[in-house]
Length: 186
Ligand code: DLZ
Image (tube, rainbow, N blue to C red):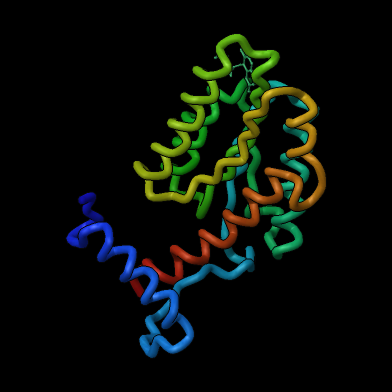
């Protein structure tokens, strides 16, 4: 019988079902932390690659659009350009380690059809961005499009919610506020 934590699987299933059926009558009201979507007072780095620049430019525009809508000040946003997505993690690491930013928004476009070593570049970029967030404790946002072809990439670099830059910047604002409110010593 498979185990989930200390519960046997059938006990776990019953437990989940019981919790579901009682969902509306649970009395426990723990504190829930959730970041607000207010960018005022937070500082953001945008690390963006130049490869597939016409699409990355749309991601940068999307990110800036979101930050402006959420109240960020121009002086609190800095953009760093690197040659390709493979170079994003190191620049993001330096930005995070500088202590000057509450979140680092990583933007790039990697297209399989045009990239023989797509898996290596996409894999290393993803791993490096993830590791940098864990190593530095600064939230790093993954706004790197990994697409099969140009059409797919164009779809993800569109307007507002269809724009990975807009999405990543919105998440950056939320996380900057969440970590400040929930974990910073007062
Ligand atoms: C070399 C390369 C290729 C073929 N394709 C892409 C891509 O689709 N997207 C991207 O961001 N970068 C690409 N690069 C460049 C690499 O990321 C890196 O800049 C170079 O290998 C130099 O280290």
